[in-house]
Length: 318
Image 1 (cartoon, rainbow, N blue to C red):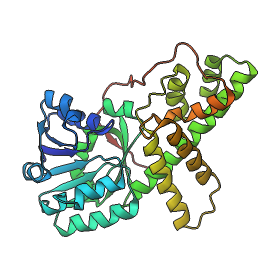
Image 2 (image 1 turned 180 degrees about the vertical axis):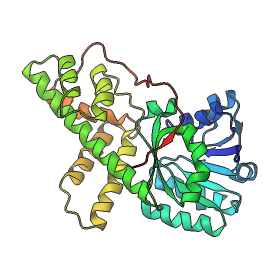
Image 3 (image 1 turned 90 degrees about the horizontal axis):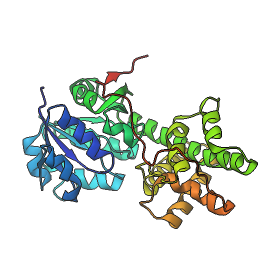
């Protein structure tokens, strides 16, 4: 391994799982988060805690961030005691958050002026796949930086798509999250029609799965809607953040979107009613409450599990 020591900043629902994949793969892992308790499992598995970003950067040649918002990314990179103060030509910064493409471009320039390399690499495909190393990754930046990062990314995810210049991966990730949010809301309405008509919801689930109306969201998130747990390991505030970023892009390019403002309005209603940190899938409960009808069916899991074996990542080429 060329880059044996890896620093990982941000140990949330997804970040902690991505970091654990690096431990499993034999990397020396140095971790940092505002809450040390989030790193307990990683520390037990052999990671080293770093209280300060300065110390982490001194021990690592690659630093990965996986943070909940553009604001958090800014704070870690250019805030007080931020990474920019300590990074140099030996470093590669891999940004795995879902963030604003404009901010990503600005931060990349700042880091590159310090002589370091930058790669944006947001992940997609569900938190359950991050646990098994089978999540997908969109990567953007210089091709040489992608080549350097690939051995690391291939331990974190399976399908890895190189997207070109900085900003491309963030934009693509925001677009795909927008689509996933549409699928989620429409599934709630489709299942409610089936329930009100009198269709067995297990039959409805299977019917949608084999139909032209199927989607990744249906095959995963519908399960935890039907079980009643709504546990998708992704929260309302994150969906609202992503939809806001998508709306910004539609305005930037003068796209007269009719769906995205409505989508954001509905998710903001859900966030207000259920709370920032409630699972995003619970947005369907808005409809359940309005209809005074729940969408429950026996035999569906309370949590999503990835049954596929862990696989070494591959670059998607076309």
